[in-house]
Image 1: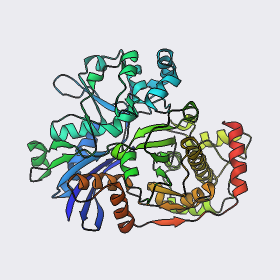
Image 2: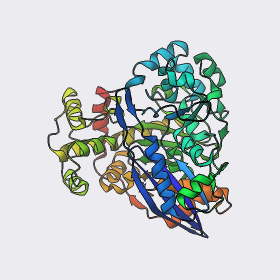
Image 3: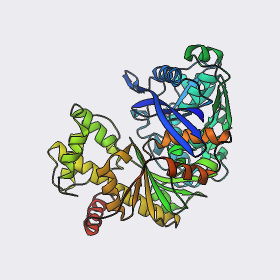
Image 4: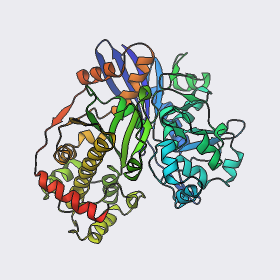
Length: 480
């Protein structure tokens, strides 16, 4: 057995997990979990990346002896470094308002259709490209000599070496998904200096070794290599989908739901752009063809507004609420910002002429029905746009623990849902490290190992298929 530390950073917490891999064995334990609390400063919403780094060090100390370290996290956000490698201010949070209206200014130079044809990335107001456009005249960007995406920034602090991991770089809207290299023409037309980015790395590439100061602080005995993994957490999660064959869809659930397909080539059609599907890169040159859905963020914000009531009890009550009474568009950017989520959900239902959910259970059922409906729409449209039929949906990530959501998703999609593993991102992180060290084989071998060793639950479709079709038609009439 070898031990691998997976640093897995989420939007609300980070953790260091230890994966132990041996012959037909794969076990994962949590060494340390720490909060990820953004700060709202006078200049806007910022990440407390120094607290995250301290949490990583605490986690490595708690992990004990490991054979390698890998880091994955969320996409699009970055830190800026000066000529001496020092951080220039706290990284801006993707939910910050600075990118409002920026996309249209970018499209005035590179029209949206041309941008999609070149990069395959869906429109989202917080894409790195729009963040850079919003900060073009800022003192920080003017002084910057290096831009590192968040996982790469932490890897730099651990090792002193700089790189840009490819799966995460593909979310910046500056990478060509056909060449797996920068889109030099897009960058030139928009005045983006690609020299700001460190050289590209692929999952499995070495990323340095822990610095002596890190070894002393964590108590680890060196050398401890840092291995490049699929550093976009969704890319790591998709690598850990325990599928056999190719006829599957996946839904990576957590703060976001990322629903789509694993393909060999991008889909860059105008229909695909209009449907707002994205072509992000995955392990082994695959394409993660998916749609971003607001995800369990909707429920998380409701729980926060309600003072964090018992979730299991709330889900039991929600299961008794009549299905599909009211639904909202779970992909609507109106729900992107924090605060007052229950009121905003109720207002959206009222504005669309639906019954207004009043109780906590009714709002929770509205959220889960809406997520299942969004999953249905995304899977069906991905099949159609990519001409790639599927027989099963794999639901991984934190939502795999939510039996009500899993069952509703099976009913909505009319397909079996295999739920698990819940810790998909960390497991994908661990397995890429293990593969780089020769312990596991190709993607199929990784997935077969997951299927043999991880607890999975299968949900068969049921319920009223006509009711789901009617709910979809009702929602489409309001939000085409």
